[in-house]
Image (cartoon, rainbow, N blue to C red; front, side):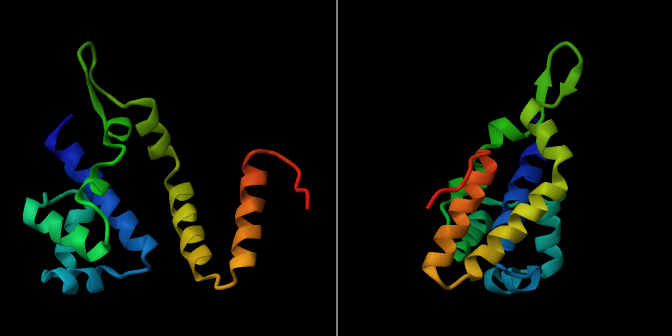
Length: 138
């Protein structure tokens, strides 16, 4: 596990949370007192965040600091003693499904905009049934 792996993962989680919340890079940057270009660099993992900055993002986005590290062991590249570096199956899966990740985020944002609780519940039931390959019953 390299420094870049960790910075990239934390950046990905930052972008994911920002997207779920429906925020622009500019609005997040303004809230924590930096430029949107710096947010871009954090999200890409090209710049590392210090602890204070990570804390500011967590506070603004209403998540614990640990949110940015959740699942890190399953999703970053790990050192393979024999062949150098190899991806974990989860990391490879994640890499192969970038479009799927984007679609999931867009669906979650759309779902949050549904105001009717009954409609939200029925839609959630439908998605679970389709994902589980089950038939719907009233």
